[in-house]
Image (cartoon, rainbow, N blue to C red; front, side):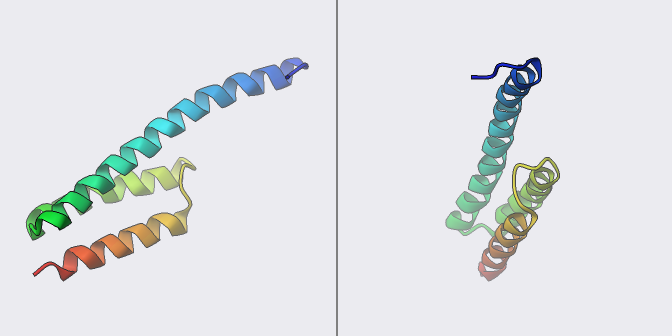
Length: 87
């Protein structure tokens, strides 16, 4: 348990940060799921539009520290390859 005033404040900040990061991560996953669904449906236009919408969300997650840069790059690369493969 936190004893010093600084550690108590840190514990409060951690709770706040955790809720914010959880919401961000959930938002990113939602965008990625929309891309996955568009790929599964086989609609190339919808898939590329969903991918365009998901890219800034992924990168925002990187700048906010929710996700590592390489992880986001890998996800974008794999999704774009799958969208490109739709014929």
